[in-house]
Length: 281
Image (cartoon, rainbow, N blue to C red):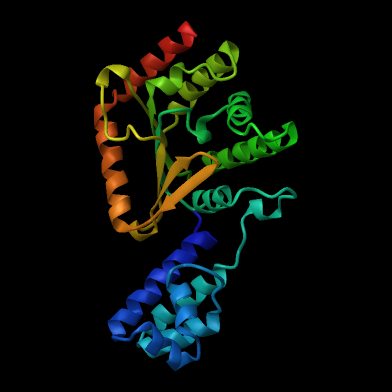
C-alpha cells in the first residue's frame, strides 16, 4: 500500500512526541530550543496543521535522534504536503468525507460493521444513488450525483495491485431493506456476492436469529494503518461522521468487531444467505 500524506503526518507526530519524551523535555522546553511556540509543537505532535521540515530537523537534533531517524522524519515532513485526487474536485465535499478519503487512501485493512446499508465500498451506483437521495433530503440531484461520483471513485482502491483487505460484517436487516426497489436491490446483492469472491474481501452476515450483539448502537468502521498507532475508528452519524483514535476507543471498537465476526455466520453460509435473499427480493 502507498504511504500517503495523512499516514506520514500521523507517523511524524507520534515519532516526534516519542523522541521528545525520551529526551525528557516538555513541549515548552523543546519549542524554546528551536524557536517555535509550545502551541506549534503541540500541533506537530497531535498531527494538526502544516509542518515545516527545517523545524523537524532542528527538533531531531535537540532530541538526540540518530542521523537515520532524523533524515527519515524530515522525509515524512516533506511528504506530508502531498495531496490526494479529491483535493482537485471542483465541488466541495463535507469535511468528514474529506478525512475519510484521506485515511482510506492509505489503509491496509478496513473492518466494517453495517447495520443499515451495504458498506459504501461494496455499493453499486444505483444503490448508492438511492441511499443518498434518502439521506440527503435537502440536496438537489446535482449534489446527489456529486456524492455518488465520489463514492464510485473511492471504490477504485479495490482495483489496486495490492488493495487493502476489506472485512465486512453486514446485518441481515441491511440486506433485506429494499433500497431503490427490487431490481436495484437484486443487482446490489449480486454485486456483494461477486465482490465476496475476491481474495481480499471478506463478507459475513449477522442474521436476525443471533439476537443481541456488541454493536446494536450503529454502523462503524475500523480503518487500520501500517502501524497500530495509525488506526482510526469511523462512526456513522446523521449528517456526517465521527473519527476516534484514542487507545481506549480503538480497543473498544476493535473488540466489538471481533465479537461481531465471531457471532456472524461463516463465509460460505453468509454467501448462501445473501443468494437466498436476492432470489426472494
